Amino acid sequence: MEALRAAHLDKSYGEGETEVHALRDIELTLNAGEVVALLGPSGSGKSTLIKVLGLVTPADRGDLWMNGKRIVDDGQLLADVGELRRSHIGFVFQKANLIPFLNARRNVELACEIGERFPARARARELLDYLGVEHRASAYPSTLSGGEQQRIAIARALANRPSLILADEPTAALDKERGRAVMDLLRRVAHEQGTAVVVVTHDHRSLDVFDALYQMEDGRLTASSTRPPPETR
Amino acid sequence: MNLAFHDVRHHFGRFAATSAVVGLLFTVVLAMAGIYQGLVDDATVLLDRMHADLWVVQRGTRGPFADPSRLDPSFELRAASVPGVVSAWAFTTQVLQRDHGEQQLRFALVGLAFPDDRGEELFVTQGRPIVQAHGELIADASLGVAVGEVLHLGRDDYRVVGLTKQVLASGGDAVVFATVADTQRIVNDDSSDALIAERERRLARLQATDLGRGQPALGDLAVDPRWTFPALPSPPIQAVLVRTAPARLNEVRRAFAGWSDVSVWTRAEEEQLVLQGMVAKARMQLGVFAAILIVSSSLLLAAVLYNLTLEKAHDIAVLKLLGARATRIAALVLEQAWATAILGYGIALALGSQAFPHFPRRVVLTETSVLGLGLLLFLVSTLASVAGVIYALRIDPGPVLES
Image (cartoon, rainbow over all chains, first blue to last red; front, side, top):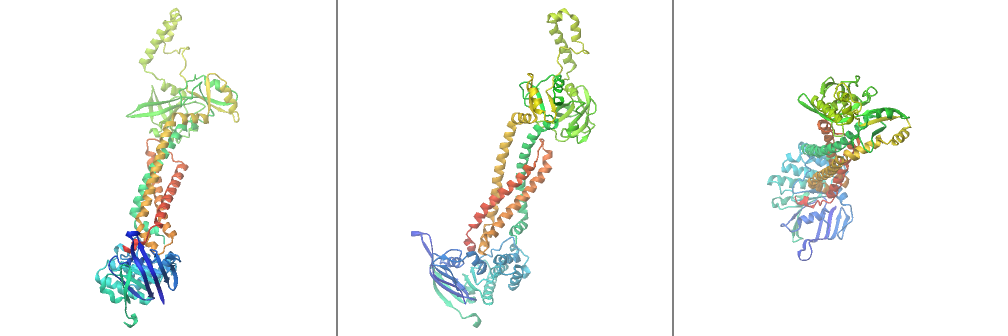
């Protein structure tokens, strides 16, 4: 099933001589349960693409479909951003960005309450258990390790069973071992929950977890390599 | 989930400190409003406690508080004879500062028309009204004397037999009540040397006239301490207070207005004379100062609350990426601001109720000032929060993705 499709996405910043083309004619299709990596040097447009796909920044031109439904038509938003974020899109950031005054369980419960799709307490417990951090449920973010924080952040992103998770360098703040664990987790989540996952990464040691690798350069998706479907690997 | 509650609970120290600062700030605002009200109350409390319908004073004056007034004591009887007058009594008041042990007592001495007026209507909170024509006082508790304590005033001792609560003169001094005769005795008490000198001056004045030179026996009488010279006036009183029969106020007033030697003021007019005269400038100054304090405190509170929102910018951006509705974000900002304002309000009231009784001047908290402060805090916190909410809803969540 097609989770996300982007066609002819363009995005520029500035005008005239200072104009920068951050995205040029982006074409991308993601299926449910697929994990893809966005690779490329700094300034190549990876983060801009994540923002456009997450409806944080509007595209200048192009179309976007989510679960087969057109949500952007030639740069014009057709749907309620809040509703899409509540029910279809989950974000995982470089830093966990947990709400500091809520403990781990309540951070996940908050996302459930905002989404209004599942009973918050039960869903939070289920996700913390699933991600192996239930024993840290009462801990506040400041007392959690970086790896634990990212797991809680992933649990929060999964709270409303989104069809798409967008992760911008989720392992940048972690050491090698914890970074690998987070990547494995994202892959497991994608395959077991049927969530499409887009990960911006510079970490070339974990590329084996991805189903497809996309290279970005000067705002273009210049290459992709598709790996075998996960069930055959 | 109430985010404001969790934020407050997690950062309780910061929240409590912020609320304490707000509370202290508005304690000062409350104090200013209370001092202003206290000034107004002090200026009019004596008017209230005298229970008079009309104040009759020297012709052309606005006495006895706003303007010096002198009336002959006999006017009391003239006033009492006017049809429609239920009672008329002399009023005297004088601010004195006398030694008492190692203390200096400053008070306004006010005469009671004993035996008709024994001070029953002064609301004596401790002790009793005056029952003897001489030697008894009712004092306000703020003077710092106790029932049974003896004050030496003039040549005599006076026993404090009753205490009132917050009966103060317009200058904030405690009021002490004695019989009119005692007040005259205390106020007009002169030393022996002064009396002897006055008798000698009197004799000299007499001997400068043909009458004095022609009748030497008059000179003997003029210097005789046991004899009151009938040509000398009695010590003056300052006003005569009149209580009228129901519905005859205007009639009695017209009667007094027709007399050429007095002016007459109603209770309400007398209050206006006091408020627009003797305490007008003090009121205006306090009022302006209170207004400046209210505006600056409100701006400060608004800045504090707005800054609290700015500090949450990152968390609000995360909430927006989670798809939080505007109402949830607004609730986080508003509820926390209200909680800060409510705790600050509570601190201001608690602190005020403990501290204000120890202020040198009376601080009067009225329902209006207490509720007004609450309303002000609510309005300022809401307006500051609305500004905070507008800012919050404009936060671009994009940078969170890169942090």
